[in-house]
Length: 124
Image: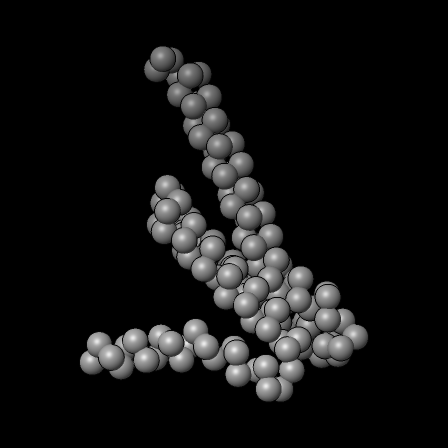
């Protein structure tokens, strides 16, 4: 069973290399997307936030990736290669970071308002 797992892992790692026979231009978005997912997964597990925030960020990442793929699927890859490559690799990361920033700012504003209410009541 262990040999089967190792074989499947090796096949999945080498799978993008089979595109060399068809055309090398697909390798950049494939490896970029794999790299982006690995970085997101590592940050997801090591970030010190509540699980709800992590789930929201994960859903934003998947949703933005889906939106970018949907909007770029009709474009000619040869004509818009740079735009497609950059948007597939960096687009979901940018949307996720923006969402994280917005949620942190709103959380801080909410906590400040709660503290102001406590201060006006007189519980110092």
